[in-house]
Image 1 (cartoon, rainbow over the protein chains, first blue to last red):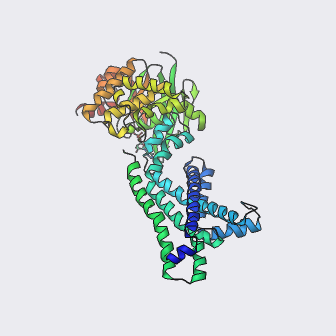
Image 2: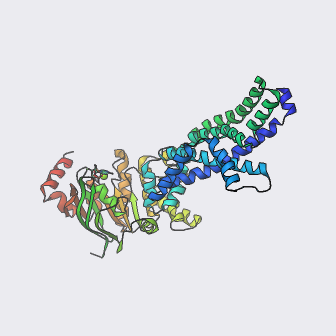
Image 3: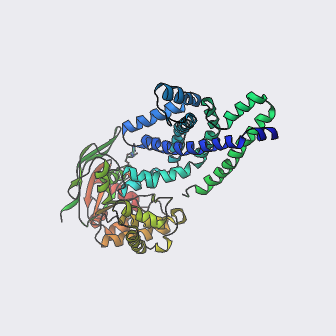
Length: 221
Length: 246
Ligand SMILES: Nc1ncnc2c1ncn2[C@@H]1O[C@H](COP(=O)(O)OP(=O)(O)OP(=O)(O)O)[C@@H](O)[C@H]1O
Ligand SMILES: [Mg+2]
């Protein structure tokens, strides 16, 4: 294990994983919130768009989305997110696809959070004259987020682990380095152990934090 | 009587096969306090909720201060700001402090600045007797206190009319009067009110008129004195007989 750490930039690779995860989480939270608002809006067309988004991206394998981003979007359609630097283009597409894919799960987690909010809350919001957007922003979503800390947290942990899928397009992160190490050194047990420990270090504290937060943030009724 | 503030004309609504509101005609004058009573399921809540369009209606018109209720969107939100509503289950915003509950509408809808809204909110909380709880959260207050905050929250919008849907029926008996006292004071101050309640004491003390509903219809209406002592319809006699013996 010492040898792997000495000969390869494991920390650098995990730094890639961390960057992917953080940016992917931010993107997924933004997209997921937007899609949730679409699904909750009173306008039919918006609801359809939201439902379509969730059904499409929740049911498409992430590997496929990753490959599509490079083979389909970058090569065939020529949509590059960085025209001068190939590895940056790949990295950015990986962030986008992680966001798009997990956004669908965040949306559903948020909707489960909305279900923890009694109907009377949004009725009271409407009754004082808040518009749909205002009652979402100030009454419904804050409570929904706080009621959905646990499922949102699970989605973020899944996102961190799923960031390894970005290896299929060669984004610089832990799983990508792992396949390089395996190619050079053979698939020794220590290789797996090194990378597994890395992921546990990333996700375990987060899991504990989420459990604590979901209790602390729960809205008292 | 002055110009009617709220006018319902030939209002109809169904839930599936159930005709919950049948040809409802009702006028409520400025400063008038109208009590709506009737058996469970007669459509009192639906009537109340239709007035600020928390429920849609199928036919007929509802106007408030001469303006027809808009269908949706910003215009509806604006009109709702002028119609206060107090619910049976208080419905305070659970994630906001008492003070923030009261200032949310004035700041976001009336575009008041924070200091101004908070000053007014404290005056209103003072008026309903919960000013010392301003920094607490709803779950930390008793039901009676929460309901008084809900009244203050409505008042902060300077509504033209206030709707109350059984404001005391979720309360422990010892808390009912603290809420009714606030409502009586409000009625005396000249607020136009529509109140669904079975509290006879309040009706006698504060109401100008009692509207009796049964099976989705307004069966009879009269002054509280006349209605409680000389109901004319059989439905009303039957209903009063049941609640007065309790
Ligand atoms: N959302 C709904 N969908 C279907 N039926 C409904 C709905 N809301 C109310 N109803 C029915 O409409 C009828 C009138 O209801 P409403 O709540 O207006 O009665 P109410 O007079 O307020 O009764 P209560 O004294 O029990 O509050 C009832 O029979 C009720 O079951
Ligand atoms: Mg009712």
